[in-house]
Length: 220
Image (cartoon, rainbow, N blue to C red; front, side):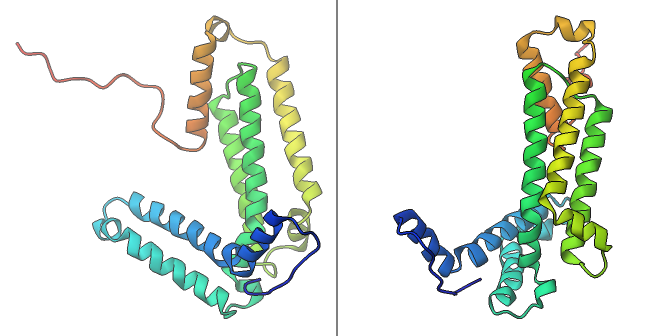
């Protein structure tokens, strides 16, 4: 935790540097502050229809981030209600899940497979359910059932889910026969389709389909 001067074995310079940063609160205060500030700033900037939030997004994000971080540094939160401790419990599972999804998309992109909209929706829904259950088990351990808390605190269970999902999708795309449209696509078109699938999976940008924007009407 913050400002606890504890030294461990090893005399490497890099280890000493990181230990010094940890002692000064770099991991316990500064990094969570930057993460919360960035997320709040993006959310406030994306809020349409409320110009007050957009014009003062910086100061609002800075103030709200300090209101979360300072009580954590001063130990004013209860351990089970500390948002920083809850965030530290959720982030490893979230990062592993996102990395597994990205590796799966890269693997399918290398073999030229494209994800249908139904499969992409299932992946997004499954990721949302897993993250929601993980957040509930970390933030409200007394509210969440014991089997959920025990499962999502077990890294072997998460690894098993990721491995089974990856194997199932890879086997599906290897066994399934490509359509004539997929066979006629060049490597460049497959890469473009793969990039569009990633954008639509994470909600980035608009839909890739549709007609081109129309210009001004021709003069008569």
